Length: 180
Image 1: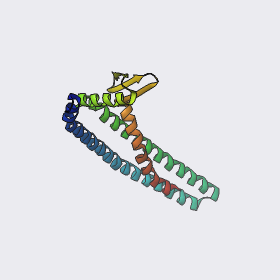
Image 2: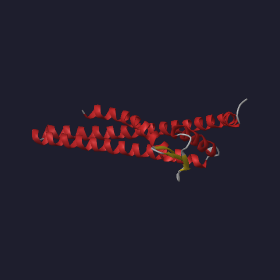
Image 3: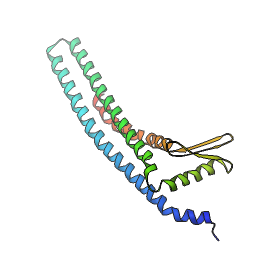
Image 4: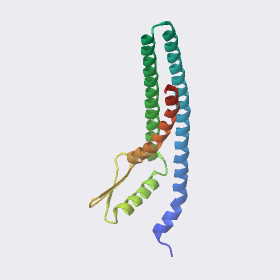
């Protein structure tokens, strides 16, 4: 015979699965858009860098060698600044979109189920005597002697952002080869 909790858990499984699919699809859409935006921004940065380097080369042919070397260095620094600025903009946009998507879960119809599931995970991790409280920004935090389990929405958003940091780093590898 199954307990009421098992029956409730089984009944909520489709809701959780749908929420996970929707959140995954939303996150994948955000990531795909960010990657397209990043590719466009990086292409523009590459064009700007190539233009700056071409101008430095042209000037170097007509001026003395030390002046040409200084111009190339300035071009490289300018190109690197463009790439770094683009990376910062991409990272900020991705972080903003991820945070908005995760924090927006509170307004979703299945949020209560998600909160209950997070509470269960917190209790399992912190122990049966843990005190579980709702986080002001959504999600829950469990506290037990010597243990804090943070399943707040801001913490979950931060974890997702950390996972996406590698994607932004991978986009950066192309311009580095260009500027080497």
